[in-house]
Length: 279
Image (cartoon, rainbow, N blue to C red; front, side, top):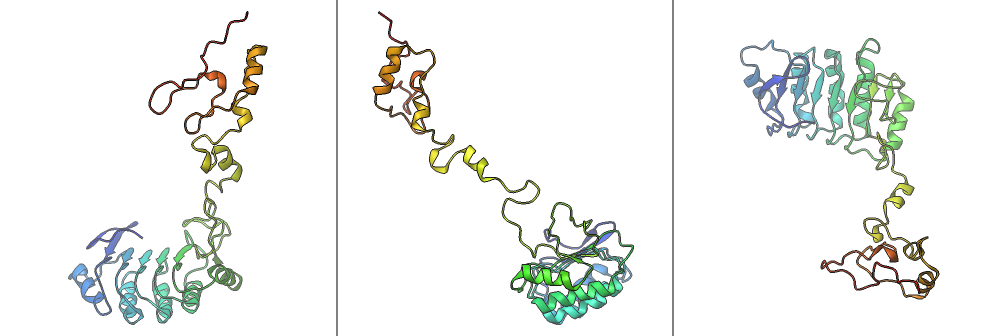
């Protein structure tokens, strides 16, 4: 992702061409690139951001031509466009000319299972299988793929160099715990709360307080009325027969604790703090 901006800049280890959010359609890319390149048509970018535009499959040839001029290209961003399955075949040339590619961002387009698989096949066949410093980070989630988990597992079974990154702790954009060449992340959803901290246990939620019990949870009536060890026999007898105290919201103090203050600030007109004298 990343915020859009204008012009070129410094990318990862080199120059970045940022044409995100430029409302570029098919046929607009060449003119936009010429404005950036100027007379220096030999300038090579390591990152090209064409995200959040209106590019379709019909305009992919311009993208391919741009990538051919950038053999050291490492990051290509085309998410949030209108690319469809016909664009899948164009990635064969992109990977062929850009052998150092590390990240391709294609989420939020119109690829179906056919287009996604075509891009995976292109990467599997064209990118070097050995010697790459990191696996290809291939973002293709949030397209028009149904039953994404089943589809991703099928891709993994069919192509030995693909990892669906089910282990999000050990599999990162820079390394694969399964030592695969291509990462196809975020097709297999993880349960909420899982990940680096793990899933919160239900017992922890119960200890933290029930939703209906307020901040500290509602204690049982027996716990609220537990007698103090220092009470006399007469106090103990009276506490057993006295009605339960109706205090403020979430009141969980024992009967000998003094009652605290009500919402208005005044003390509750209950039993005095000082126990009665023995006769």
